[in-house]
Length: 451
Image (tube, rainbow, N blue to C red):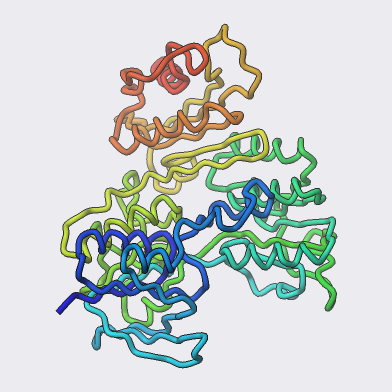
């Protein structure tokens, strides 16, 4: 009998797994259950669709359910919500939204790819018209549909993380007066202060108000819509509010099935993406991600990781033997005319883990000193182990050119456990329009050697 592969969730991890299973097993039955009406789309592109950089929805969709069925014989069931996993019977219970009934579906191997969901605190007024999250395609559609029939002018973005800042820029480009509120004393708390301040400066230079140390307690408005965001310190007028304070893994199904959870209640998986129950795998934003630097399970939900984990889970589900190598925590974000990026650990991470560390902080041109360069110079901050000098992490800020190249070099160095001194030996590309004879990362290494 052909093997039945069942996948819960039709986004990055789920569809990567489904595709890999089909490559390895031409005869097996591949069933994907997705509770929404769209699959395989770029969540990270949603702020750019809202802002008009991406002109239409279909550009964010990699493949439709029909394409998966016709080209790969992968059966995707839209508007099918899995409500229970029963490992003892090796079956799931599925609520079919359109039929309004519940069915039982047996499986041989199961993948949980339920992703993450936006965190929305129980604030009074959170359900007022004009209050949105921006996590899913459905969220973006609701926001754009609402904007097509309303004319708000004052937008408040609650949360100064990656999506919050990208959304602030998107709304600014649509002509809104934008205010960003954050509970923390700085934007993007995963970055160190020196780098976060560069992002904040980019916002304020473009007319976006930033208010830190602001604890939201509720939202005010009436049946016509939201009118203000209330914090412990005051009140901020708004006729549009985006809540963007982070995400949490959707792991309730796994927990109820007796599957072990890990950091931040993500589903704990091993290097083969197996859970604590045989024949059940998990991947993507709902699962843990092994951190190579911490040498421990972590939770760093990103689309790149979800695709990698989905592929590896699919190989193993189909009888192969692949291992997830882990992450080093690499991320990059554009904030108007500035770019900030990070990989590995920052100072606060090192302090929290009790790692003895040292820091080098430099500013450098990303091109030769004599070559014209009108963009921002790079600010580079590297952390390395005080005793063995192994690289622990780094953060880079600059303009729209030069940051991405260096953060990827740094991520590669961290992945291979290089020391800060070994950066100098790397054979990196050089021509005056692109680099100096010594890359800025190598310049930082030289400063670190001088002590």
